Amino acid sequence: MIVVMSPNTSNEQVGRVVDQLNRNGVDSFIVPGLNRKTVEVFGDTNGLVRSVLQNFPMVESIRDGGDPILAVGRQPEDTTFEIPLGNAETIGGKKIALIAGPCAVESLDQVLEIAHAVKNAGAVALRGGAFKPRTSPYSFQGHGEPGLEMLARAREETGLAVITEVMRCDYVELVAKYADVLQVGSRNMHNTQLLAAVGEQEKPVLLKRGWGATLKEFLLAAEYIMLRGNPNVILCERGIRTYETYVRNTLALAVVPEVKRISRLPIIVDPSHGTGRSHLVAPMSNASIACGADGLIIEVHNRPQVAWTDADQALDRDQFTALAQGLQAFAGACNRTL
Ligand code: PEP
Ligand code: MN
Image (cartoon, rainbow, N blue to C red; front, side, top):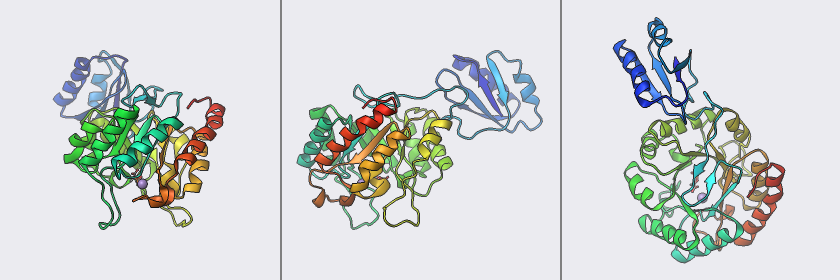
């Protein structure tokens, strides 16, 4: 059962509803909203509490059953979130957010060179991994904190917001010290402890879809973050694993309009991991904008041929600049800006 409170109900008034539920031995959970709250009620088997609550001030309606995507869902209001990126930019409004940078931070020179190039091409944020979730333990695992320092230096020089991955609960504070947005990667989408940990700090979170996760599981992962008090979750479709082999992953773009229909969260697309092939990144970027994505996160390298990680999918600076220019027409056709 879900109790929907009227707009601008105070915390105290919500607390009275919860007290009443407690007195009746019924468990509940307060779901944060924008300007109204909902209370999810567990175990009111005989409907007793329902009849009491119906007469409570500020209780607008009581609904049966429950959609488990309460926090990320559009209900009870047709709202969307515009999420701050740390500089003057946001994701989720009319402007499409271009995020670009290397797969991994390799050196200060590399990250600075790429940061300036993507900034000139129109990017609003810099991506780059300092902690890398690698399939093989023999592969480069990232520079760790020195890599974070390099990203911070690139932010100082360019004004770009920094988006970087956190893989461990005990590193959340460290990564949040340097990053504007914390990334939870595909492999960690199911790590509920990490989701809770990033939900308990204030920086926005970029949540990538698990490569074996359904849309429902993806949204429930976002729910874990939001229920800990952090409403600023940006979803990212990055492809799922299928039997197909000509691409690294199969980019499931229908998720974008579906997320828009059922959720209030912004969603961006990662066509780099979503295809694994540099020649497919621009066409799939265009397609992402055409189907309603709020942004793109793209891997760009100053020398893709010798990139330490994910070389096959990296664009060079000119390719990224051309991609950004080509997007203008698609953005315009969708009544968006870049
Ligand atoms: C990344 O963006 O650096 C990354 C590792 O992507 P994913 O988690 O989608 O594989
Ligand atoms: Mn990568």
